[in-house]
Image (cartoon, rainbow, N blue to C red; front, top):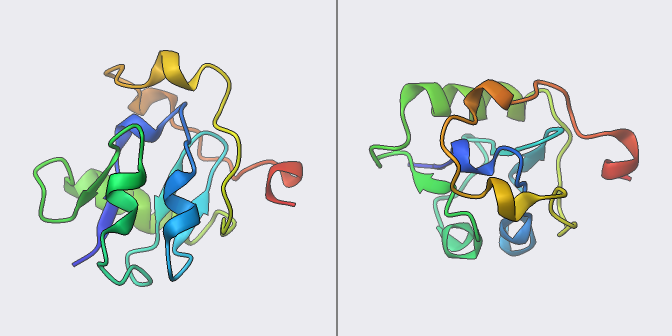
Length: 115
């Protein structure tokens, strides 16, 4: 089993989860984080740390094949993130807003963000 980052992370990108991950399995896009499913050890500590409640177990109904695929795909393309950063501007305004999938950027985090 693994954990999956879902739609509510888009345009929020809180990184509290990254700070507690013992295996550094988070990867950072321009406006979302993902979990590498082959690196996640199923400890679950990230779930309670996510202010947006965007992380679920792969057995959860919210972890559809779509989100499992997004996490797997982008974990292979985006840079690894291992420390907490400031959330995106207006993260609070986007937290809980439905229909954010269309706003998912396929771009990795900007160079200065990953430094």
